[in-house]
Length: 229
Image (cartoon, rainbow, N blue to C red; front, side, top):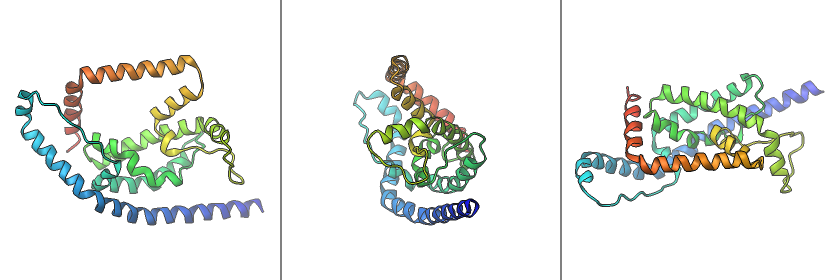
């Protein structure tokens, strides 16, 4: 009976995963159509900014930044392609990684959101995006597994009932980012040393960004240009 039940759960999971992978391109297509005009307009203005960079250096005018939803990234083909490819890849890796206890299911559809920064850093180089994503999220799976009991305890503390048969829950979207997971662990531990360390690192990074913004951007652009080929 246990064997039959186990195969039944695997079949149910396979059907659910197939449904996600079928619906995923349709959903992303809707986002792409909605945000593509805005993304193209942003690219046009970026090109204009680059051509007039010398004039900007001579000007004292402030630069204004417009924050937009990360759904704009769905208009990028590299985000769509790598996001779809990583869905089955991350499922296979989750099964193969020794000691991993996290199986991403629901959050798989959020993979395009999760890799937008990697796509930007790698300038859309598909091979590098996939390779870097595999390494990044593999580490994230271990962190999500390590924090599974803590995350479950935090959720249950607010009266959330776990489904029948579920022992631990976690968020692949949140915990599979190594930095997010480590910050979560530091604060949920209520250890003043770890909390103070995260604050110090944040302040040091903030000061570095404020005082060396242009140098940081120049370095990132230089390194990103190497990923075009």
